[in-house]
Length: 276
Length: 276
Image 1 (cartoon, chains in turn cyan, brown):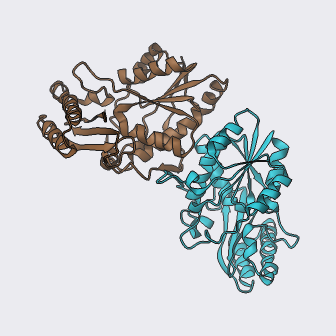
Image 2 (cartoon, chains in turn purple, red; image 1 turned 120 degrees about the vertical axis):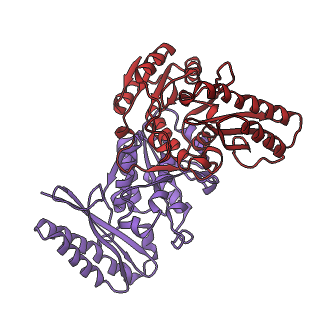
Image 3 (tube, helix red, strand yellow; image 1 turned 135 degrees about the vertical axis):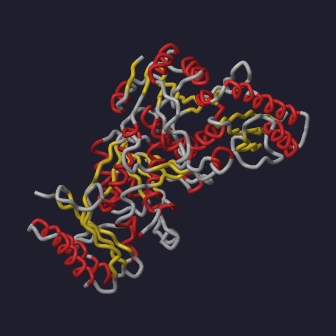
């Protein structure tokens, strides 16, 4: 595995015309990230992973400073997973002074976009820049960040970015808790309690299949999540996927998405329900 | 010459690995545009021109609706100049509903950016999209829009866009008037009067060479342009190029840029002075 920190060296390394599967991450790798690498290996000549904790997708009162980092461990995991090139740039490289930004105009005002203003502008800014640099054949994103996936797909479509976006399933602990770098913030008890989130999502999906009305499903989900001790609900929403707009009679896929705040960790989780 | 309106057909047409020189325009072609084509032909296997009157770079009270258009004439001129592929998309193709935008964070608050808020956001939005689609080897821009050139160079550098930006000289009438699609708005008398702009710029450049202080050069330039009948000065500025920031002792290139409003036409012109 080659570790590259300089953009021009990266470009040179990738200039030989092999197909590239790209896995952009913020590091502190877990099985979710590694499942993306696995998918990328299957479908491309070469796998490029980036590790960059992107400051512009954190709000002023969020956890940028304490976001978990462990490059040596990440390097080891990436190597074992079969990453060919690990791109590990510094902030000055990714954000030269007063760089222009990408701003999202729709789909960023619901779910995490409502709770975290500017978050998806930061995501699209860094992703579009990484796409220009890596020029991947395919890029792999986990559906835990379902809103992110939808907005990146929209950007790629609207801006004619020559890359195929591959949606990958959420990877969970045995308990059902979705894997997340932020799970490290959870206490032992919180980790057990948080596994209720997945159970509640499954119940909601089953209720939709049984024909329960959306408002009732949402109410029940709020009730279930409210019962998780020492936590507060950030949002519980059902939206059309991937448009992220209001559910209508013609919606064929519904995203059931929640965010729950524990003492030190804000967790998100979701499931997609398909009609019929 | 092949005329293409559909983005996917364009991508297919350009998928054979030939080098591409790209000339993005808003049409109503004049010798300035054709000089870009000429440069592009010299340096690339294939020349792609786009014609698209980009709505987002016009302000609410500007001339979007009456901006001159003549596709048949443009087609003829492009063909004669040796353009290989003419891309002529419609607005719905270039601006799907609620598309994300590029927003400039520096260098857009002076010169035309100050007079035309949002103008350069619109320019970078469409140019970045066209670059993704055409994936040119080189892209050609005229220095009449010197601020545009500087901001596009900055965007390409900061976002690692894999294209070489080629700056091309301003093309002028025999009178010295800079060629512009908007010259068609000028009356016969205005067209004669407007040629004073170039003379005033040459005097300013000569004064800098003679060591006249910048503030005096600017004052003299304001005086000269104020004397042009039936017109008002929009701005007269001297800035560091291509940073567009304040001139300092270490500035090696100065952009002397002006905008003058005639009855129906707002004209811009400039010259770059290089320190000895």
